[in-house]
Image 1 (cartoon, rainbow, N blue to C red):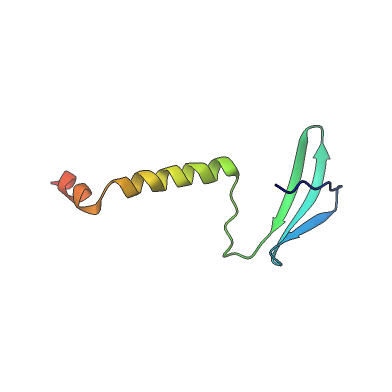
Image 2: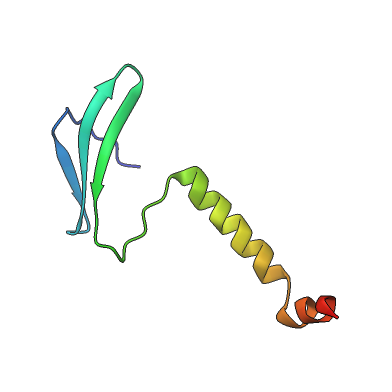
Length: 71
């Protein structure tokens, strides 16, 4: 993991097309802004994990089993 120190208004660039800017620092919270192309998905980690778990569950149920349950 790369750890960086940034101040309000400073930014970093990832992969030439994603820019992360520090917008505000208040107590133990940091507000960031993310500028990325529309085709680059950006998720909070807890949401990303939920999506991955839902996808794993969906993969475990085959299409034929789902159709059999309908009848």
